[in-house]
Length: 287
Image (tube, rainbow, N blue to C red; front, top):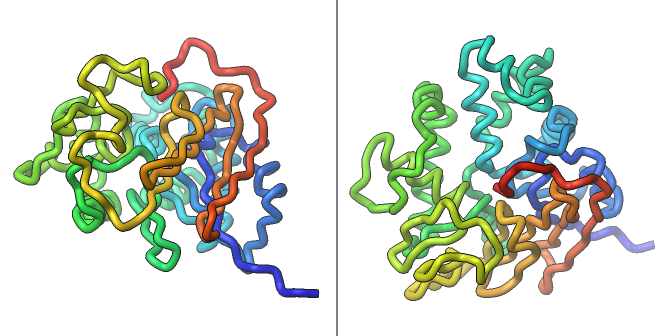
């Protein structure tokens, strides 16, 4: 009998859908001794099982590579509020915030990556996307700035100040909070932008529904050509997209779609999906 090959799978936005994640991991025949799982961010919120998801992914140790999504950062920010304010959030996040192991889980989450690269397989993992004019090296540099701040003594200040739609355009001369917020907006919130790279936060539908003058971030004219493939999530209305060096794998599990894994260490990436059996979350934007 031959030896099983090591595999690396990237998994799209889970958003608290523990049951589907467990089924997908089983379908992948994941073996923590030899295999690695990449997670595109947004582990939490809306699926009802965020605490179980965090505990599972954390338990995988070095077998799990996680990049932060906007919902993950939001959870970390809520955890810095007064206890009575934390008690007012939705029941799913309250379960995390008042769990006996909350501090361990949140500290672990705060120390995850914003961007991850494996040059051996020539893939980059990020939640939403990249600023169209960034080289790979610039993206890594800016991600490391954010990671250092999140992991350092100044993380509380960043978590309190990171929300906001301004700046909506990255510029190398940005400094302080504006620079950090602009970086977070690119890495975790971007879908459409204009030809300069200015983010259009209110446009969230599938390509073709956006206002004139806006482009999916990976189709902006004059886009920097990069020497690495990108796997990302965040954009459930885009669905499964593979083109222009981008592999987008948020297939809307929490919205009644599916949870998708992409094998990134194969010469021709392979797709495996688990269909969601849950009813779509109502009354919410797909962000």
